[in-house]
Length: 88
Image 1 (spheres, rainbow, N blue to C red):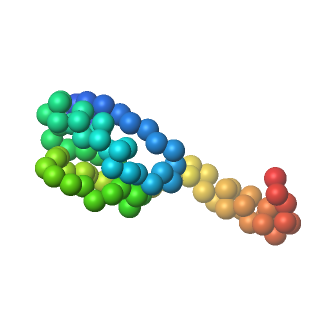
Image 2: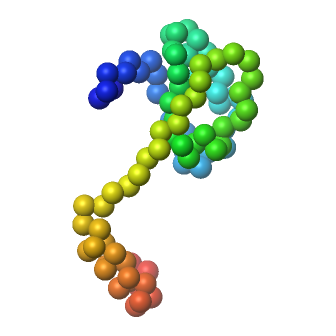
């Protein structure tokens, strides 16, 4: 939306979900009804999608990256925890 895309619908699944054809049916139906020109998901989730059958909009994958504001402090704290064997 920030870039001016019109979002026709959103669907959520638990992390590491292995998608089945039944999971994609309502998504594909909504896409067809709304005239969506593409579906967008994360790059990670594309690995868990079944092969799509029939005609439909392309599925575009967004690559996401994590960036820490205080990376050096995080790394120091992490290494200290690992060195002490602390589980907290």
